[in-house]
Length: 73
Image (cartoon, rainbow, N blue to C red; front, top):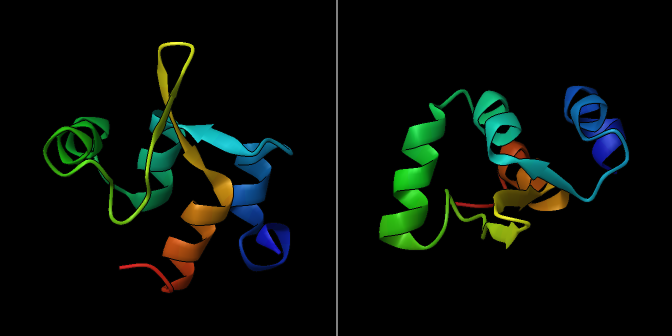
């Protein structure tokens, strides 16, 4: 599904289930620090819940694709 609708996102993800905050910021065309602030103040980034794994903030590729598709807020 992700590769069909968003080939660029699929190329960035390279088969992974999660992308880094830097990759998410490029996909959303927002500064990385803006996404960090949203995560701190709201607990989510435009409707995407971030996961902290290994000291890094990661976003689900499926949730990112849904946001880019317009099905999330």
